[in-house]
Image (cartoon, rainbow, N blue to C red):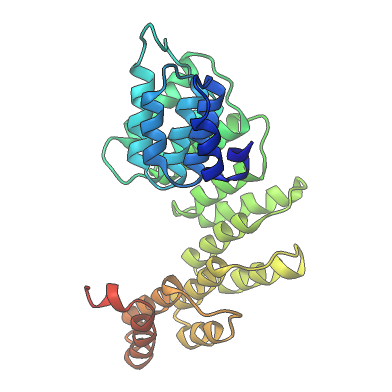
Length: 304
């Protein structure tokens, strides 16, 4: 019970008092440690378990993925797939396992992840595993991020049921692959089918506008977040608009937009403007932005 509410200390006390914990009790602790960010100990606990099931493995694989340890998530998945002994037997992945490992492949900038992701996709197909909305979305996101847009589109077209996360994945994949107009057309089609965009959707479409230098369209979309859909723009959305204006050479407008933001800009927002200043030779404005960036990141900017 305690582990479900994130009270790790009390959960540990209760767990330590159990002489022979069941696999369910072990799994509850794995989940608690993983959600608390202590994935290293969760992995240690996993290895010490007398018996493990798919929930055990997936709790730690998912924990690694959610905490940014993508390589560790993939390595643990491989270990799970290769393990077939008398104590544990072969453990078949479930939906959450596939989603976590595909997400790790998508976000790991390392040789071999394309092959790994394709192998997982092939395994799903060979074993006639149902491609759920979330597995399909994870595949689209994976293929989009590793530069295999045609595969992402193929998975998308084969999916009978699509949720907002699915549309977001394909729109983002198109936007980041030089298909900005197609991304915006897909966004329109999504709305025509009655789905309401969310914050993730707007990051994708604003990115498409920035890359295509569609200033008017981008600004209209940004305004529609609040006016039409009742969403509150986040730092990432403001950053997209700054990038939109900066890429179009509208540096003063971008600077004024930053000044009118309801919160202080972060390094990514200022960095987008600084990069454009360098490209367009705006030395004075670039120095101003650089000074502000230095104030935000004194250690990283000075190499210390």
